[in-house]
Length: 239
Image (cartoon, rainbow, N blue to C red; front, side, top):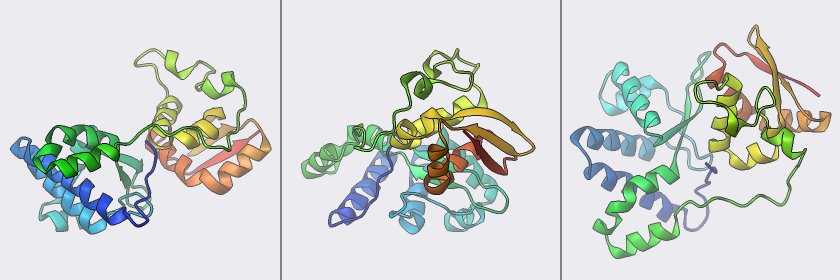
């Protein structure tokens, strides 16, 4: 999913529209879903980082905000991520809190049937704001179709049999959803050389690509890797 930056003259309106979508979708659901959406609306309103399009809040702070215990927070976050209303960007490891992002396409899909209950003007605005697949950026680094489509063992990811996906395959699938342009332009050409002792060894098609990713996109890559490689400490590149 493309990251959205809620900035500019219409940012305030878009934020209110999104919060309204979460609220009306929740109110139209079961009592349990209503509670989940109320908690999410409160959390997003209070702590969402709109400039970075991410939510970084510790479980203890969530528990205090929601007036529940931390076990309830864990269950709630699991429900929201399982439903893909929230997408996890980075795990909470080594004293660092986890990071999440609102999944706009899924929120639009869930709330679309009840937009008209808010009003025709709202329904029209939300229709215009529907997330669409973004075309490739002007700067596109193509390293060969076979390399870009290959998984860990050189097999195209789309042909990996169900249940046989590796940690690397799942990591790449996660990046495809979270950052499609970055995956297309930079990450798809990477391959995994192995992971041992908390070190993930990644092979890049060139020294330039390795250096560019380390300088500009390592945070995104590391976040996805930590979710699939428990105990990961760092990523080492080779070319």
